[in-house]
Length: 500
Image (tube, rainbow, N blue to C red; front, side):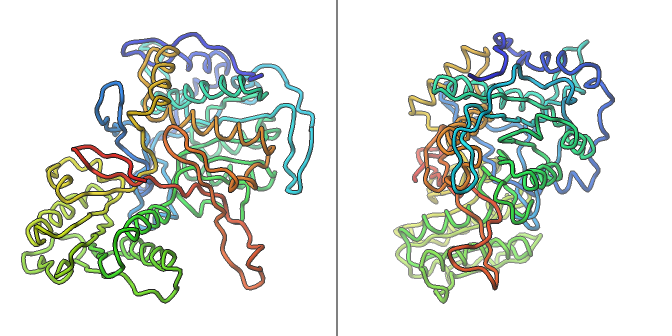
């Protein structure tokens, strides 16, 4: 059985879930402590530099694409070194004190049924810790107001609860402790040191901020506890850590997916990369070039054509002659590695010039990154006639009966339309629960046996390894496990549709 409380229906209309009240009541006065200081200017700048999270998702009930609000804690894409940075833009987060017990009840039988060669233990019941930024200390009981981050977290948790109900039907017994992670390093450290539910966990899901993810990942590594980071797309937050599982694909994975999709239709000489020169863009272009070698299965493969423009300024008319790269090709794929809001003018300039310079009979595909969905100053006609494709970590298929059923169930349960984070919470909990049921608490060693399609994406985890002089080909040390599946979306009939 799933040992979490059976909550009442959430408030409908403009009211958001009342689950936070349960957190407040269960945690005592400590949650009403003064909120942590606001993030520094440096932290805010770092926050703008990470994530492959898709900011636009399709809402089947409204029959339209819904933009994720700036209030929602989406991590921005890295503009320096994507793989090194994760988000921490929102107010600090800690956790429910250990003596409160979080949201759970009872103590399930955790007897070990069997153990495999990886040390993974199949049990009659498992302990799961959900570490999320509820920010209960910022709740205003007089004004009855939740912070935007609390709303995002409650929606994520609502999806998690739906998954727990499904897992209970499938016969999985879990004890789930829900902890308010608040974001403060000192509070997270105190939680790791003092909260017995964390120490006894079989699985930790969360937290959100970069420094806290790194801290919890190291704790998980030392204590050999599997940990899932459900949202951050950053790599290099932990080293040599086979207990760390990253759900959101990194920038490198997005570049690989784009190249693999393009190479199915275009020869290397037909693919061109246009970019403004900067260290971040150079690193990204290198990912594309390495992906092309991987697809070619040839480390000496002919490099893709590159055309660079000065950084931080729009190209002049003289710089805009694209005939040399469009040329006499009967078909061409153009990749523009741009992601920040400041890049939008460059993308628009490139689109308009490509449209002017190309042969009208030439077949063309234009590839971009997820943040293009946020670009609101570009005429959608360009997206349509230039056959724009983008990578995305998520896609909600409006024709899927499963999506439609989840929408109905979520609304029936909570009285609100399910936002994207509800799907994320549902999928991560359902997938990890099923993996534990099949393979035990160290299920990551069996991840490559499974590649299921869930509501918002497909899970195709791979080992991230880095060869060393002493390691053999068959026994490379594991840095982490990462979901490498990236959706490729095509803008067609004035909306993005999945093509892979």
